[in-house]
Length: 285
Image 1: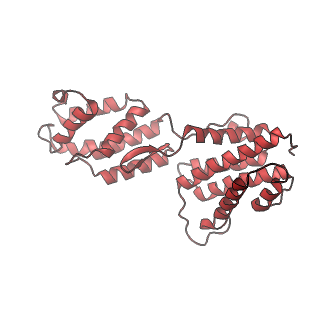
Image 2: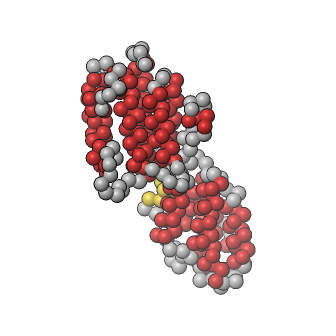
Image 3: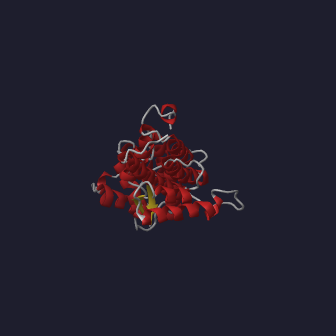
């Protein structure tokens, strides 16, 4: 998050790569293609003499749908051709190519599929891509609507004077988005704290924990019981699941998907409550 976004002077854009691929992700994915696919083929000088010739023909025939006699004769030329194509593609074409490599059933592959998929997923996770390999195929792990809910909650909290919500959601996003040292445990803590903050601010009781604040909130806002119970249970999860809200006694097992789910859920709920409060013209201090 940029400085201007952190201090609330510019609208926040959640940097999860859903409809684009930045240079870091593009280069990292190509490096994996090069390591797992290109380098093993250099054991042979020519493509026809390579033990991976059948797979290369499948790539041209089944994926590119081009004449197989257009396949470069030398493996070095094949590498240059694939590299030129790869770096001319848009994000969808890159993902299509990776999806083909991950889902192919061809025998005598130049790479171990399990290792290739695992390493791709590590890169996709590190660079905050909105996609992962699931059962050998690329699949979305979030949607544009979910990302919009995070952005909307951050911007809505600024416009309607819910400073605590903005601070907690910003911290949750920062801790989730840190590529060098992501802190999923504390990202989840900040997300649920945003819900606690909006409840405290609407009720005017800055000391109530979430469970009590939600009960007080029902006296001011019409909230469906299922929603109330859902967030009380989520609060319970963050209170005893892996020790998020108290001192950790054991190493946690939280991951990016846990933190992302919590950020999306809490953003949606805070947005809902802020909109309700705004419609009822509740004074927010």
